[in-house]
Length: 114
Ligand code: 5GP
Ligand code: ZN
Image 1: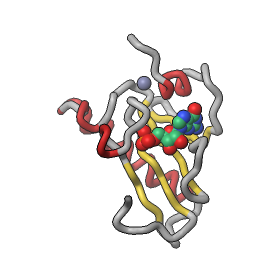
Image 2 (image 1 turned 90 degrees about the vertical axis):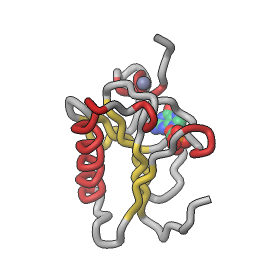
Image 3 (image 1 turned 180 degrees about the vertical axis):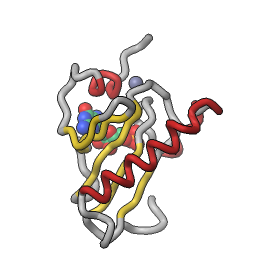
Image 4 (image 1 turned 135 degrees about the vertical axis):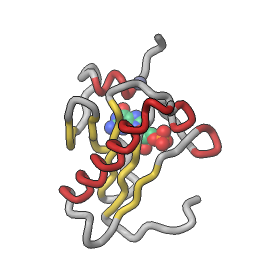
């Protein structure tokens, strides 16, 4: 198995600013935030990206979204709103090959994204 940055963060080998942790997911602040609130939510299980999801991952994929929505609430983002982003592959702008959901909030976000 090759090394994976987010597996190393999930294993505690690389430090992060943790926001949420449970048996299936870890959430931490993005090192280069693109909005006042910018949190990454990752499954502890290594899945390379959206295109690697299997039929057996339906619970995990749903729980990822629900976990992220609860984190957004706990960050106080419900009233003003926020955005989830999952980049996939080169055209999608994915730079880390471990599935992660971005929570972005705290400012007016532009549409469409670049
Ligand atoms: P992607 O571009 O793959 O959708 O998102 C990867 C995100 O990971 C980027 O927003 C980037 O700033 C963030 N990132 C990269 N390396 C680290 C790191 O070592 N720690 C943290 N907390 N975030 C990172
Ligand atoms: Zn990984």
